[in-house]
Length: 447
Image (tube, rainbow, N blue to C red; front, side, top):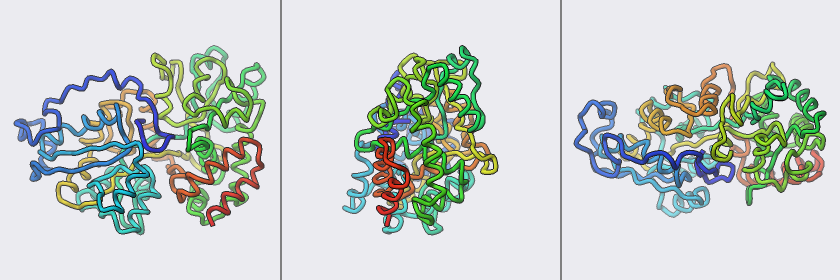
């Protein structure tokens, strides 16, 4: 993924800087409707005509090399329609967006990575509901599991855009082949493999949760994935909405199960030290030992592919790849934890609705995918346009109708909990505080 506001999504974009930044046949996207308007290349955009010379502002956390790709992804649209898109990416997006909106300086569109923030603006009456064309496009192209996270009180406000899959375990295919280890397909198999690896003197797992002001978030992802796998999506939904207490016995059980790996000195922390080193190991560096043989497995999202050093082959037969974080209870189905951003509108001018509709379309998602380093849950994405093996695997998982998707839990909770006491509580837990005390503290903060 690109540079997003939340530190969990701020990564260098491997290989992106080498992409040519030449314009498409229709131009650079900075001008009004080009001479190619009306050509075969522009035929797909005729339904958005009628707004030549109009401007639409978009605000998001995506910046640097990824922002260049973003602007290239809609360049043909802007040239063919004449709509000018004024894009701004800001590292302080989540802090500044409320300031701008509340101060009467809202952008026309924003890419919001937190459903909780979408709800905050919708409840305050700041968002515009989708136009009819956008709503139709979104409902045709996006899974219901995703649309519900952009819906507030029965009204769809946010259109899912980019996505990532968090239910992954990174490993070295070369090392596994050399040692004769088999990729596990169940939790029990993964624990048996961990014991086998530990017996060789290699630490089977490495992890790191240090992330500046956001230290602790990688551990919350572990807990969310395990809650999904032990309790199923219904209990997960009750937990993230506080329909059940944060310290419900079922959540205690899930945290303790995660602890059988994360707090196990026999398993942790390859390349860095013991369990307590997890708290001081930067999340961006935490999985690198899988490529040097100092640890065998690292649970982290699809976007971690961008953390490996230049020249690392990320593929099924390469230096690093990932397997699906196995199910624990087969009766709970095939749960998938992930995240992404939603396109919300603060204005409903026709040209704004046209851009929001376009961003949900087949033309847009395939245009963006062809530029690399991006996936989406949009079912109009042709996987043939996805080059990266890990991105292909992510798309297959997102489009798998047998799977059950759930959004990152801490992003669904109130910020004071999800990005506050939950993150901090996980640091205390890694450093030795008992599960009951940690979860009681988080529960008290929610009240």
